[in-house]
Length: 133
Image 1 (tube, rainbow, N blue to C red):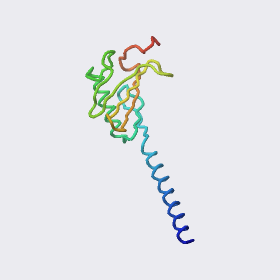
Image 2: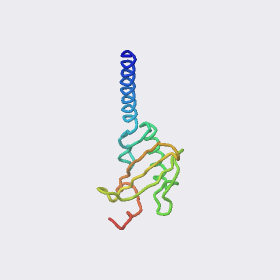
Image 3: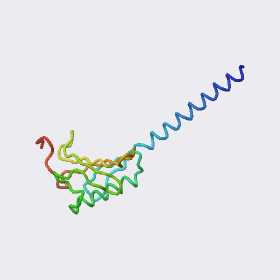
Image 4: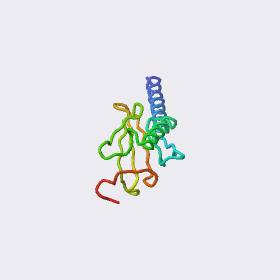
């Protein structure tokens, strides 16, 4: 009886340690900060459940479209565009940097997310919502 209880306790302890290790490994891999894109107005890139090379690629493709005034250019009527499999939307004006733009790109029905910030001094943006500025 003691052997069975000891084995059960050891199994519970080992599984708890394994679950904690798996949780911390996924928690570290979930959020990544990928810096900025040199030569563009993008000054901060972050990803969730996405690796940095993919997050930087999405930000680079979006920035290229914005620079060429393509489908992802900042316009008042079109607030959503598509970059590869990501649906991107933007918001101008947020606390601390009211003239900058925040872009959020999500994969529909998946937990992958890339977000990046544009410097309002380097790219033409619509006026912030609420008349701030």
